[in-house]
Length: 231
Image 1: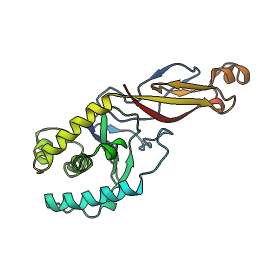
Image 2: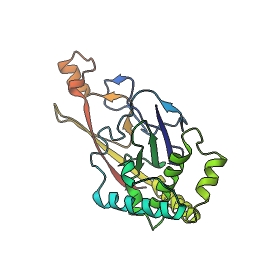
Image 3: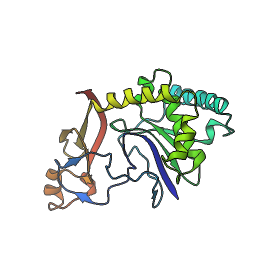
Image 4: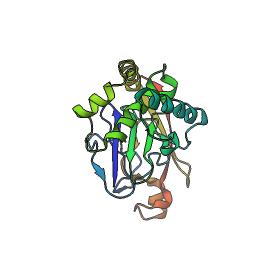
């Protein structure tokens, strides 16, 4: 059983699309709006990256997370073992609402951070995000963001400094305007879009020429990373 819990402005779990499209201009935001916070997903957890984040956690970020993990355990008098008891990764960089997420599975919990959080951190953001997700780990998925969770999180002395940085970060994310490059590896056609595709996308030109106009995975559009600009 897998559970998703996260910190941010209302973002939710991402999963593989369940349908195909054979178009090259139908796009939507890839941060679903339905609130599935703490609801179990069915089946195995799929990587957040899906080709959108192609890099693993940078070594300096991994080291920073380990450092603040030990600091938090000391400050809260928690016995959570080692930071390597958890896996860490980045959220997709185009996310404008979710700042961090924990995925509670039968194996190691996975904690994901927005990649820009490390650059925008003024001493408390990453630490507070990690603290937030560790509270979820301690209390379990069913507690979610209720009174018990709030009491646990606010017992940390750094809570209010973190909330200020988190609010500043949320405002910065809201001003970002991600642009995505989609390209067909068969014919070389390229498309710039400001949202990520809903469903798998294929090149119309190639499907018309080689697949009688039907969707064909052989001509799926490759989605590159997001180019972030401020609006």
